[in-house]
Each structure stands twice: as structure tokens, then as C-alpha cells.
Length: 387
Image 1 (tube, rainbow, N blue to C red):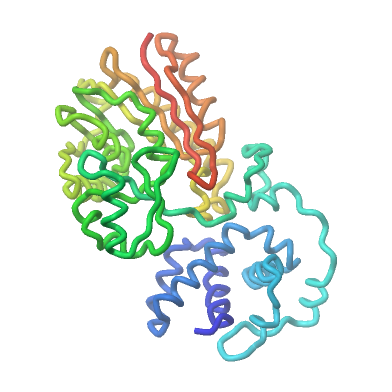
Image 2 (image 1 turned 90 degrees about the vertical axis):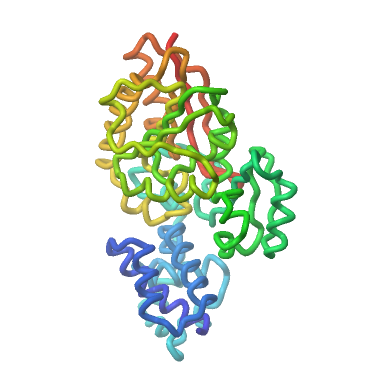
């Protein structure tokens, strides 16, 4: 496909996403309906669509045009590329700009409002506050690997991956992480991945686990476990006499954990019933609660455009309920670890402080906000225990 044909395909996909369709679904539908497109074409179109979603408002601002067509015109302007090289009406490319569009594009634009600079809905400006690294949110997220250091060293993992033409480097943020410097698509086919020696996991998420006071023996519960990334990361840092249980309200999400645990050789008891109705106590209870996901929006940028104030209120109520309910699952001397992948204080510090004010017998042992940066997505952790 020519560059202009890739843009045309991207415009058609983005139009559907703007109308409310899930990004991944539309990319999959397009790929299945256009078998002629090679892997490089599909990858290029995917990159174009996701870049446009990360920069939706600022690209529209550059062009002064609305809709997917306006977004991609603005993308070319922002990168100092010739509009006519893409919007030329040749072959399968987008049609040329109309006279009205040209006049709009040539009109001098006003300074960008903060929410447009940030590429977020207006109502979220206050939630983000005045952060100075907002361009991180607008850029592509890196791909990180977690090395199972109980089974292989980072040095050996780097060497083995290099044999599969996958270049990686160590990160200062945490001692288990490798950053992939190039090709990523072959990772699931490598021996290290298939044998549970590496997993795909953001370095910031790994760094949260490294902050936990993992028990040397006893029982660990991963509540809201999802695919089990936290479970497996904790297991790689504990002794063999620690037992693991995992629960998620959406039971289908635990299927992935079962497969991943088998690869890593870790036994995890997948709970079908909500443990809050039982009498079992745990030495470490991890609650990676449902949240806005704002710390990882560069990975799923369509989510920020669908996120509403009402949904945030609903999520905060769920977070409060989970904190209250899971506190009773913590054994004497144990730890309750509250986690989010959010940048918003209303989901982080404010939730924990509200819990402590209501439950005087609890205290905060530590709290940590891992800021959104080139090294990591954004995460929050508060470790709590009874006084």
C-alpha cells in the first residue's frame, strides 16, 4: 500500500472509532476485510490510528477541521509534512482538500487551551492538574518484559532474547525489567516466553510489586486479579512456601492467569466465589482496583475519549467498597495493598485517606505514586496494616 492509501484506510477506521466503536475491534475488522494488506501495512495503519487517538484534539486544532479527515490533516501539519503528498486523490488515497478546507487550514490558529495541549476532554483538566510531562501521554508506550529472576538472570535473558533477534536493555526503575528496543511481535514465540521465564509487563507495574513487603511464608490473595500480572510478579519474588489465591468478579479474565501460571510453574488457586463472604485470612491482600486507567491511556487512547465524569463517580464508589470489604480478609500482622493505574488523586490518596479516617485501627505503612514518564506508565500503591 502507498502512504496515502494507508492514510485513507486509517481515516475510515478512525471515523468509526470517533463514532463510538472500540479501536481494537475496528482495526481487526479492517484487517480481516482487506487481506491484501501485508503485515507492514497493518502495523503502519495501526500506528497511524493510535497516534491520532493520542493526539486527537491537538491535531484537529492544527488543521481547524473536524472528524478523522481533519485529524490526519492536522497530523501532517504538526510533523511539517506536505498535505498534498497524502491528500492528492491518486490511487486509493484521500481526495484533495476542497477550497473551503484549504482556507480553513491556512487560517492562523489561536493558542491551544490546556485540555487541547493535553489531548483530553475538557472536564478532565482539573483532574490532571498542571503536569509538565503531558507529551508522554501523547506518545507511544514502550514495551517492557518482566524477567522471572528466580529462574533466569537479566544478563542471561538479554543474551537468549538476542538469539531470537530481540534487542533489550536493563532499566534503572526495577531489577526485573527489560525494555524491548526493536521488534516485539515475536516475543510470544520465544522459548523464554513459552517457558514462563519472561512476561509482558510495564516496568512501573513491576516496580509497585517490588515495593511490597512480600511474606516469606503464608498466604497471598490477588483480588481483582484479572490476567494475574501482579500474582506472577509477586510469586517471582517470594519463597516456595507461600501459597497464592486469585479472584476476579469477571471470572473469564482468570483464564489467562491459569495459562500464564502453568507456563511459569506457579500454583494459583483460582477462586470461584468472592472470598469476602468466607472466613479465610491472608498475609497479603492485593487489590488492584478498577479505575480510570489514566496512567495507561497512551496504550489504550480511545478509552480517554469515552471516559465520563459519571463513570469516574461509579468507579470511586466501587473502589471504596472493595477497600472496606477486603480489609476483613487481612490476617493479624498482614498487609492490604491498594493499587491503581490512575494519575488522579481522587482514586489514589483521597480514597486511602478516606478509608483511614473511617477505620481508625488502620494505618498507612507506605504510599508511592509512580509518575507517568518515558520509563513507566502511571501507578499508585498504598500499603496498609492494622495499628
